[in-house]
Length: 445
Image 1 (cartoon, rainbow, N blue to C red):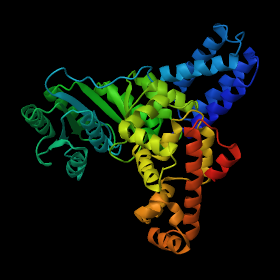
Image 2: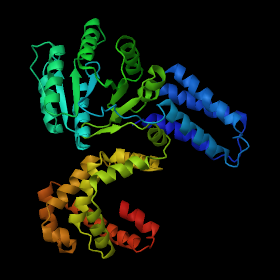
Image 3: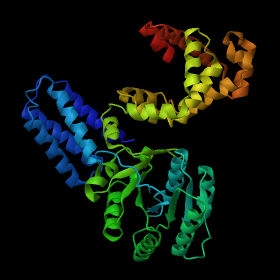
Image 4: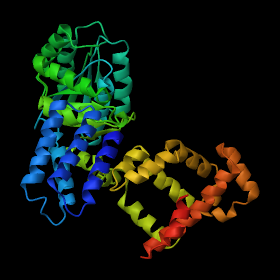
């Protein structure tokens, strides 16, 4: 996400960082480059002007130019101001201390609102809450059926009465049912339109009056840039909302919506969707996103994701196997599946500090999810004995594995060779030894 913006900002700040001493002219030049990068990213013009003015003022007024490492200080200031621009500290849902919390979801048609409802239900359900979904979108064809299907996948209870009843009555009925069923959070999916109109606003206002939601969330398509911000402004003028859910963030190479919406509307981004899978909805942390944009990674999110899919006993057993060089292809397959549970490979890499170059190399060699699918297919085409001891894999076995996985003998050869090198290097690292860098690079090819 934000690839174009991230590349431009990192390039500009790298030039600043590499200078031993900075002058006011150097700061002015950097601000011009940052201004252009933000405008190309479709960030609101007034927001860009205010942002660069604030950064420049801090750089020139806090003794930065006379500091020991002025370039590092400028990067720190840009990082802090980016985080502030996107809302500063993150905010969670306003959950009720007792009874049923009501979350009203609004947005235009095509913004991904119904999918976002199911994703939010999944996340809240994984957090131990009992979640319900109210199907109040009676306008879009198949919207109710979609919510029923996705709600089932999220583990939520779906309250629906088809498309013939008034959506305001459905919302009130669903809330009554949710309270009777002991539901902790009821997410109300409302109708969207192709544009903002009186009927949409009146209906939202009526549902809000009947259900008295604790939070009204506006779902915006991140890929529409400034249009998303304009929609948010129009909604705010007619029906007040409390926060934003950004969808399709993984497809947004520019970042205009994420960087503008808080400054323009005053409403924070609470969640961001970064993939199609139902579990790919994350709390939005402005300070972490700023660090990712500047190539400094997002270690906290990486740790949280790893903790979600890892098990302490399994980790200890894995360490023991690595130390004793008993790490097998079966173990490798299990670890690969755990990493994939953390989300798309490029998203995971993007959380690692300094991963910008690695991401570019990844794109150049076309190392995507399909490559991992092929590796998994090759390993699954092996017998348990072959996975435990790859040395058993002779010529005839390689042909059989290649046929079974739909790949080539060369692909099987490469996997076996790379696994042997990887196991050796992992053992060396576990024993506190640094592997030969040339061997390390050879093993990654």
